[in-house]
Image (tube, rainbow, N blue to C red):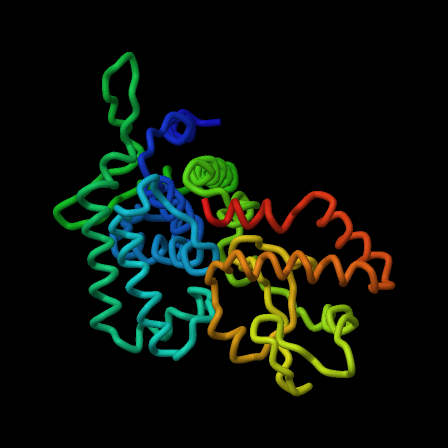
Length: 325
C-alpha cells in the first residue's frame, strides 16, 4: 500500500467527528474519483459536485431511515436542514409523503432549478467553511497535522487531485469507501437506536435498497378476518377487496425489514397518509393482541414460528421503545 493511501487510512481511522460531515465528504470524493473517466490529467472537483453527492447520501438516510447525523436533534447540521427543505419540496410537488429515492427525486428538484441550485449552493458553502480543510487534519502528539492528500482552493471552491493520486485512489477505492462506511455507521450508532445501521449507510442507492412487495403476506393476514369482512387495523372500518394495503406498524424506515408480526391490513389512503409516523401506545397494544390471535390460527409453519419467536422475545415492545428513544 502506498504512502499516499496510508495517509488516507490514517485520516479516516483517527478522525474526530461531532457529526458525519467529514465522512460524507470523504465518501463523495472517493466516489467522484472512482467514477471519473479521464486518468491522463489532474482532476478538479468543484464543491457543488461534492454537495450533490452528499445531498444524495443525507436524502436517503433522512427520508427513508430518519437517521440523526449529530448528537443534538434540536440543532441539526446545516446540510441536514438543506436536505429537509428538498424533501419537503418533493413531498409538496408529488402530493405524497411516500419516500422516493434521490435518484428519482432529483428530476423533481431540478424542475425548479433556482430552488435546487440554492440548496446545493448552501451545502457547498458549508463545505467551504467547515469541512474541506478539517478533513485533512489529524492530531499527533497533541498537535494538528495537515495531511496534503489534495490541493484545496477555498476561494474558487474546488479540490484538485494529481493524476497519480487519482490512479491510487481508484485502485484502493473499495477499501477506502468500506472504511468510511464503517466509521459512518459507528458514529450513527451513537446518535440512533435503529437496527441495521451499517446496511443503511452502505447501500444508499435505489439499486441497493428496495422495499419488497408485501402482497405475499396478504393471505396470512386475512386468515384472521371474520364473517368474510376485511377490517382496517387502524380504523376498524370494513374495506373493499380492491382497497387493501399492507402496512408496517413500526415504520419500515426504522426496521428495514418485513416481518409478519409488524404487518397489518389497512386501506390504501391510510397507508399513504401514515408515512413514517410513530405509532401510538394504543396501536402497539392492539398489534400485540393481534399477534396473539394470529399465531393461534396461522397454519403455515414458517409464519407461525416467526410470530411465536416475536412474541416470546417481546419484539413489538423492544422495537417500539428503541424507536422512541
